[in-house]
Image 1 (tube, one colour):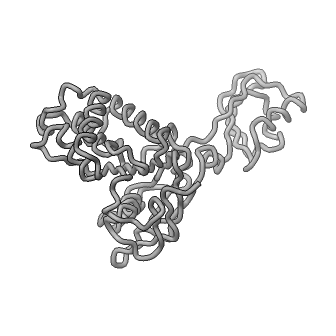
Image 2: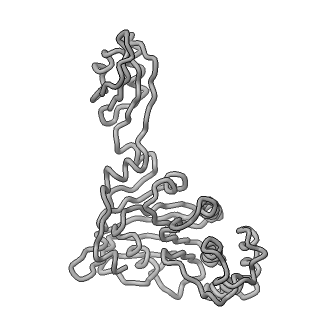
Length: 311
């Protein structure tokens, strides 16, 4: 399988600021790839290099088998973080215009644009001016401009920013639909819930450098599992339990415990050892690390850099 997007040893400097630092990754057809990091992590800078809006200091980018080229728009869809359409254009004219820029025949762009507006519950607003629409409606029109050409590579920069829950769900559905249609979808975000629900793989960035790449399960596996248990005090001596933090004393020798396991130890193994040793349990519930926990652990706080502000 040929990667739709391949980035190798990518570096970008803005004066004395290193915005992207020796970054490598690849995105495959039909894959939803989350590009995660705090403010200033280098997400937008990287995506703009992929789109040939800015040039890298060093490294290599391959898009659809070739070097990035702004003229190669027919197979690419892009939803920028900074939303903006021509206010005096109608919704369908805006979508058709973007389709034409992506080398679509006008009739095809208009026909698909009308289908998208109908799907987005805007069929009756096709001829309405963008300036007369609510923010949510205009955002759906902007999404339609990004996918009207049925792109092979769909790039979404902080796409959920400012969307209400209904439109967030619509966008999630469209991301899944695009991937099912064979597109490689890459989206940047600092909201972990969307990545957790959608992504096949994620990349965590901090100060332009990769901190993690892999599946959601792989990411959760970077932190030890935690178990909430109700048990006698002897549970602290079970093999694989790194720490047993006692909670409420329930009387008669029973306590609530938060168990932190040794790295690589599975909760099922601890349960089996409790059973084998005859230790009684009234509760034993695994609490796996969330993507938010992993993000805080690997990335920490936000990364405010002049390089990202220069985007």
